Image 1 (cartoon, one colour):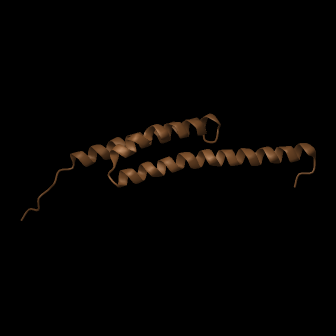
Image 2 (tube, rainbow, N blue to C red):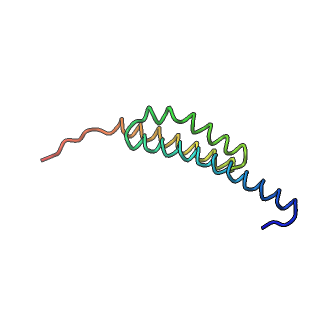
Image 3 (tube, rainbow, N blue to C red):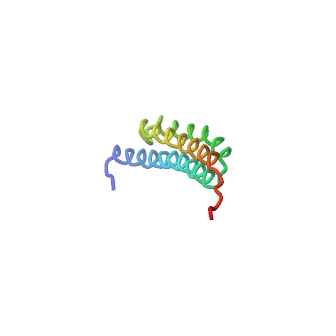
Length: 100
């Protein structure tokens, strides 16, 4: 445990910052989870509607250094690509008849 006054203050600050960082991380992870669930349920319109919320959560986390800027960019890019690719592959999948 900290002994000096400055060490006690530093501990209080780090506890507060950790709590804020975890809240921001959980916020974007929750949106990512919702998007992935929507895609697996073939609700591509719902997943597309969640993209702005994802961008907002990731930008907030990156702005406060809860995550790195490049990680936020990478996640935004990959999920947008995942949504468009899943929607495209679902609409292009032909119904095949069984050959006898």
